[in-house]
Length: 424
RNA sequence: GGAAGGGUGGCCGAGCGGUUGAAGGCGGCGGCCUCGAAAGCCGUUGAGGGUCUUUCGGCUCUCCGUGAGUUCGAAUCUCACCCCUUCCGCCA
Image 1 (cartoon, rainbow, N blue to C red):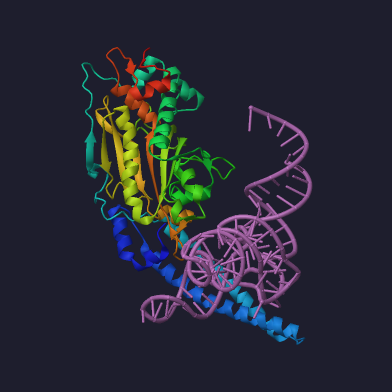
Image 2 (cartoon, rainbow, N blue to C red):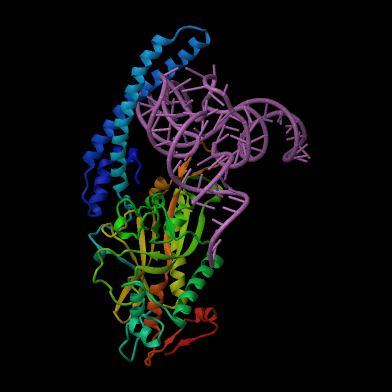
């Protein structure tokens, strides 16, 4: 959420940001509502002040044994007037809140302006796409040939867009999760967490999934619980409503969780394979930092995510999201894209963002500087480190052999009891 | 699911319907003491909003789990909900 004061004082900036994101906006409604709110608030506060003063007088009079009846009767009117105005104010406040909750973050000034993903600049490319002496197969063909992936049976159990792994496939998924968690905790200084996989509406609102993107989520019937679409949600909310000490920052958390996404509006897209599923595994990285260090922390977060691909020796590229492709809550985002030989293109496997104080304001996560009065909002960041299912897909496709077998990356072999190749 | 108890400031913990934004303690900060530190002593120390001011800051409103209600006045009374603890039941 943007600060109401900031929006009031920077209507043009907000307007421009919305346009850069390709979003329609109605800031006039905000402006009139905001003016109205403050006018009513001032009047209301004057009345409340009067009530406070007179109530004290009544107490004095009663203590002195005087008759306060006349004043009490007078205050009855004031009180009902206050109640009335509070109701009006509540209505306006609600309207303003819903406008503010619907405004996306302001892109950082360094973010390239662009319409959509076609204008995302490539920052760098790492590794060489493998050369094959045969036609590389897509991972779903390899997976079913090897007997480690079975989408047909998954569909019987649940439906379309669910995975079912067997044997070395399940083992590979688990090996990746452990490898990622070990790397981030031992080499990059993250604390491992294992959070709830369902969260309440408040937490979803804090990180920006709600109220605008409800249709992307799975909600439990008759419960105020949503399945998490990413560990970002529960992990960022660990510190909601807390005031941290400056010395505690930065805080680094990593978490393995399954992720659940409705994928509404993606009918017909990536219908085959592990790329777009209702349920997938992910190891997430989350940081809480001071405002002055958050962009440096974004760089190192990106490196931490990259290191996984580098160690797996998978070819990838780093792109930066342009204004038109930037997520709702993010101020700046880098994506990692891994090479997928069968499709001949790079696919997103990680997204690393700085949310600045956008989520912190919603979640009320603040910190106190030593020797300074007052509090400030922290900056939150997160990134995939990495999406596990897509990683399996990339390994299958990049390390496939002519006979349909798949080599296991060196760093994963110890996680798979020395297995170095998956054969049918 | 049944029964009981409880949710108060960074933390612990008092709190009669009317100078209680909240005693006391811990912690933090400043000072005295000391060569320095510890101990001890003294002082200070919540958050958010509105408004005024060039700054320091002033004035004011709100906040004692959440939301309604009673009242001139609510941390204190009523109701609903949420959460926590303990016991019983059920269960991985």
